Image (cartoon, rainbow, N blue to C red; front, side, top):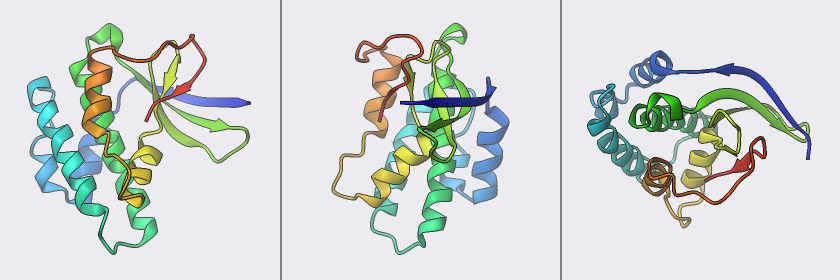
Amino acid sequence: MQITVKTQWSTVHGAARTVMQNAGFKKITHLLSSDEKKGKHVVVAIKQYVNDLRYSNLPDQELRLISIELGILWAYQVNVAKKAKERWVWFLISFDGSPEQLAFAPRDCSYVILPGSWIYEMITHPTSDNTIVLLYNMLLANNLPDAEPKSYTLLR
Protein backbone atom coordinates (compact mmCIF):
# COMPACT_ATOMS: atom_id res chain seq x y z
CA MET A 1 0.00 0.00 0.00
CA GLN A 2 1.32 3.44 -0.94
CA ILE A 3 0.68 6.22 1.58
CA THR A 4 1.23 9.88 0.72
CA VAL A 5 1.29 12.44 3.52
CA LYS A 6 1.12 16.21 2.96
CA THR A 7 1.03 19.29 5.14
CA GLN A 8 1.05 18.59 8.85
CA TRP A 9 -0.70 20.87 11.37
CA SER A 10 -0.26 20.67 15.11
CA THR A 11 -3.57 22.18 16.17
CA VAL A 12 -7.01 23.06 14.86
CA HIS A 13 -8.33 24.92 17.89
CA GLY A 14 -9.44 27.87 15.75
CA ALA A 15 -10.70 25.64 12.95
CA ALA A 16 -12.95 23.60 15.25
CA ARG A 17 -14.44 26.72 16.80
CA THR A 18 -14.96 28.42 13.42
CA VAL A 19 -16.38 25.33 11.76
CA MET A 20 -18.96 24.76 14.46
CA GLN A 21 -19.98 28.42 14.63
CA ASN A 22 -20.26 28.69 10.84
CA ALA A 23 -22.31 25.51 10.68
CA GLY A 24 -24.74 26.90 13.24
CA PHE A 25 -24.39 23.98 15.65
CA LYS A 26 -25.29 26.05 18.69
CA LYS A 27 -26.05 22.92 20.71
CA ILE A 28 -22.44 21.78 20.38
CA THR A 29 -20.69 25.14 19.97
CA HIS A 30 -21.60 26.38 23.42
CA LEU A 31 -19.73 23.40 24.87
CA LEU A 32 -16.53 23.96 22.87
CA SER A 33 -13.72 25.05 25.13
CA SER A 34 -10.25 24.10 26.31
CA ASP A 35 -11.78 22.49 29.39
CA GLU A 36 -11.19 18.73 29.27
CA LYS A 37 -14.08 18.11 31.67
CA LYS A 38 -16.46 19.60 29.12
CA GLY A 39 -14.84 17.54 26.38
CA LYS A 40 -16.68 14.37 27.32
CA HIS A 41 -19.98 16.30 27.13
CA VAL A 42 -19.06 17.51 23.64
CA VAL A 43 -18.21 13.96 22.53
CA VAL A 44 -21.54 12.67 23.87
CA ALA A 45 -23.33 15.54 22.07
CA ILE A 46 -21.55 14.62 18.82
CA LYS A 47 -22.63 10.99 19.24
CA GLN A 48 -26.25 12.05 19.72
CA TYR A 49 -26.09 14.41 16.74
CA VAL A 50 -24.74 11.58 14.56
CA ASN A 51 -27.59 9.35 15.75
CA ASP A 52 -30.07 12.10 14.81
CA LEU A 53 -28.49 12.50 11.36
CA ARG A 54 -28.70 8.78 10.59
CA TYR A 55 -32.35 9.03 9.64
CA SER A 56 -32.32 12.53 8.17
CA ASN A 57 -33.15 13.31 4.57
CA LEU A 58 -30.22 15.68 4.10
CA PRO A 59 -28.41 15.60 0.74
CA ASP A 60 -25.25 13.50 0.61
CA GLN A 61 -22.98 16.52 0.05
CA GLU A 62 -24.34 18.19 3.18
CA LEU A 63 -23.81 14.99 5.20
CA ARG A 64 -20.20 14.86 4.01
CA LEU A 65 -19.57 18.44 5.08
CA ILE A 66 -21.23 17.92 8.46
CA SER A 67 -19.16 14.74 8.94
CA ILE A 68 -15.92 16.65 8.41
CA GLU A 69 -17.04 19.39 10.79
CA LEU A 70 -18.04 16.92 13.50
CA GLY A 71 -14.83 14.93 12.95
CA ILE A 72 -12.72 18.04 13.52
CA LEU A 73 -14.64 18.87 16.66
CA TRP A 74 -14.35 15.29 17.97
CA ALA A 75 -10.59 15.17 17.34
CA TYR A 76 -10.15 18.56 18.97
CA GLN A 77 -11.72 17.15 22.14
CA VAL A 78 -9.24 14.25 22.07
CA ASN A 79 -6.34 16.70 21.96
CA VAL A 80 -7.77 18.87 24.72
CA ALA A 81 -7.96 15.81 26.98
CA LYS A 82 -4.46 14.51 26.14
CA LYS A 83 -1.30 15.86 27.71
CA ALA A 84 0.73 18.17 25.46
CA LYS A 85 3.39 15.56 24.63
CA GLU A 86 0.71 13.04 23.63
CA ARG A 87 -1.32 15.34 21.39
CA TRP A 88 -2.05 14.16 17.89
CA VAL A 89 -1.39 16.06 14.67
CA TRP A 90 -3.36 16.84 11.49
CA PHE A 91 -2.30 16.22 7.90
CA LEU A 92 -3.67 15.28 4.49
CA ILE A 93 -3.28 11.64 3.51
CA SER A 94 -3.91 9.57 0.40
CA PHE A 95 -3.96 5.76 0.31
CA ASP A 96 -2.95 4.11 -2.98
CA GLY A 97 -3.62 7.26 -4.99
CA SER A 98 -7.13 7.83 -3.60
CA PRO A 99 -8.30 11.43 -3.03
CA GLU A 100 -6.64 13.21 -0.13
CA GLN A 101 -8.44 13.12 3.20
CA LEU A 102 -8.00 14.99 6.44
CA ALA A 103 -6.20 12.69 8.87
CA PHE A 104 -5.50 12.77 12.61
CA ALA A 105 -2.61 10.74 14.05
CA PRO A 106 -0.07 10.52 16.87
CA ARG A 107 3.31 12.02 16.05
CA ASP A 108 4.83 8.58 15.36
CA CYS A 109 2.00 7.80 12.88
CA SER A 110 1.42 4.36 14.38
CA TYR A 111 -2.32 5.01 14.03
CA VAL A 112 -4.46 7.20 11.84
CA ILE A 113 -8.06 8.32 12.06
CA LEU A 114 -9.92 9.81 9.11
CA PRO A 115 -12.49 11.66 11.22
CA GLY A 116 -14.69 12.92 8.39
CA SER A 117 -14.86 9.57 6.62
CA TRP A 118 -15.35 7.70 9.88
CA ILE A 119 -18.29 9.85 10.97
CA TYR A 120 -19.79 9.87 7.45
CA GLU A 121 -19.76 6.05 7.47
CA MET A 122 -21.59 6.00 10.81
CA ILE A 123 -24.21 8.45 9.57
CA THR A 124 -24.85 6.65 6.28
CA HIS A 125 -24.89 3.16 7.82
CA PRO A 126 -27.47 3.59 10.59
CA THR A 127 -27.35 -0.03 11.73
CA SER A 128 -23.60 0.12 12.41
CA ASP A 129 -22.33 0.86 15.90
CA ASN A 130 -21.81 4.50 16.83
CA THR A 131 -18.27 4.29 18.24
CA ILE A 132 -17.69 8.00 18.85
CA VAL A 133 -17.56 7.77 22.65
CA LEU A 134 -15.89 4.34 22.63
CA LEU A 135 -12.93 5.43 20.48
CA TYR A 136 -12.58 8.67 22.47
CA ASN A 137 -12.34 6.64 25.71
CA MET A 138 -9.91 4.15 24.15
CA LEU A 139 -7.62 6.97 22.99
CA LEU A 140 -7.61 8.68 26.38
CA ALA A 141 -6.91 5.39 28.16
CA ASN A 142 -4.23 4.47 25.58
CA ASN A 143 -6.09 1.19 25.21
CA LEU A 144 -5.30 0.53 21.54
CA PRO A 145 -4.08 -2.47 19.57
CA ASP A 146 -0.34 -2.75 19.02
CA ALA A 147 0.97 -0.80 16.04
CA GLU A 148 4.42 0.04 14.72
CA PRO A 149 5.53 3.64 14.14
CA LYS A 150 4.66 4.88 10.63
CA SER A 151 2.28 1.94 10.10
CA TYR A 152 -0.78 4.24 9.84
CA THR A 153 -3.01 1.61 11.43
CA LEU A 154 -6.56 2.80 10.77
CA LEU A 155 -8.76 3.33 13.83
CA ARG A 156 -12.54 3.76 13.62
